[in-house]
Length: 288
Image (tube, rainbow, N blue to C red; front, side):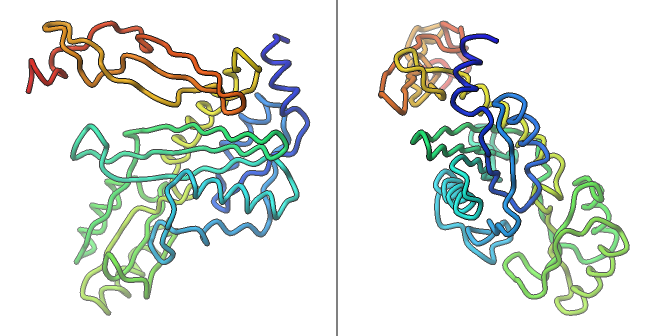
């Protein structure tokens, strides 16, 4: 066992780690954390993370994803008595750079109350079936369902985008889908169909959560050079990578700044991606 592995196991080994989820996220999170950290993962029986917000809007998420994930961890620790927790929070919508394309960002947060440590990692992915539409016929319904991977991926049906009565969630078979479409259309003259983004109804999202778990493990394995605390990660990205053609500064990353959450030791890494010049197509001077 390497020195790093010994340090990680000394922090986390043989401890109970509670996963704050009611949507079966433990299926992809637990195996990785148990293998890499030596923890025993548990899920509280009565945890209801929907009280902090639902994808369908009945309960609004009032906090940013990071703070929501922290609250999930706190709720799970309170219910279980554990002092180590992990929670994930997903966001869906337009990609921040690649416009007109949907993306899924998964944030994974670990809270270690025993060691007063919080570690966060995230994964931004274009792999998502996040979508919704209004349909007025079974043909339109079937076209949409096939496009988003139904029935392996669940669907939600309601009258309009912002209506909650009635609403059917977790639909995973054609007979039920068509039945609730007719029920909804009888009331509204149409139906609003959307992908169910809850993890247990969305294998594509589960795969992104799994990648975020790998990112969390990678960050935990990064130890502070000063005090050996896990989670020595990037806290700031400084732009300014010079253009390959005109040498003017671009928005590309010139520095990554790492900081320890325990002792505040910092370290700057120049050319963090191993690239010393930016492609001119991303330069505001060469390609305004």
